[in-house]
Image (tube, rainbow, N blue to C red; front, side):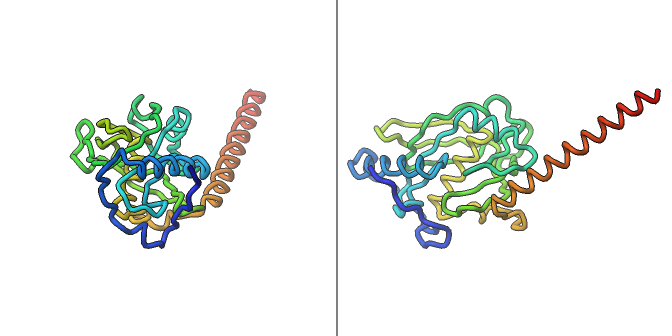
Length: 227
C-alpha cells in the first residue's frame, strides 16, 4: 500500500474519459484500491476517482459519515466543507444517512425525479471542492437524487439510490471518470472562491448576526424597562 500523488486541475489525465475495468478482481485492481484508500485518508477526502491518481480507469471510492451528512444537510447558508459540501436540504432522513466505504467499479449513474419534478430538472445548488483543485470551492448544481449501480471489489453487484450529500458525492466522483471537474458544472463562475476566503466570510457573517442579535436583545430589555 502507498500514498499516491493526486493529479491537479490542468493535468491531461483529469480530462480523459476513463476506460472500463475488465477484471474487477485482479491483483492490480486490488492494489490500486488499497493505494487509493490510503491516499484518500491521507488527504482527508470523502471520495476519490482513479483518474485523480493518474489511472484512467472506471473506479471510484467514497464514504459519508452520519456527522458529515447531517452537517452538509444543514449547510443552507452556503458554507463550504472540507472536500465536498452538498445541499441535501429537503431530502429528509435519506439525505443524512451514513454511507459505508464503497468501492464502485464501472459505475452507471442516472438521475431520479422527486415528487412532482421533471426528470433531470430536480437540481439543487451546493458548495463543492476537490482534492484535484486544492484550496478552491464553487457553487455547483447537482441532481437532488440519483440511482447508481456497479461492481464491488469482490465481484458483488452494487445498486443504490442516493439523496442529498450522498448523491452529490457520487455525481462528483463519477464525473471524474468522464473527464469532468466540478467547475465545468458551475453555472456562475463568480462563486468560484478560495476556501480560506469563504471561511473568513462565514465567520464575519456569523459575527455580524451575533452582534445584531445582541443589539436587538438590548433594545428589547430597554423597552421592557421603560414600560
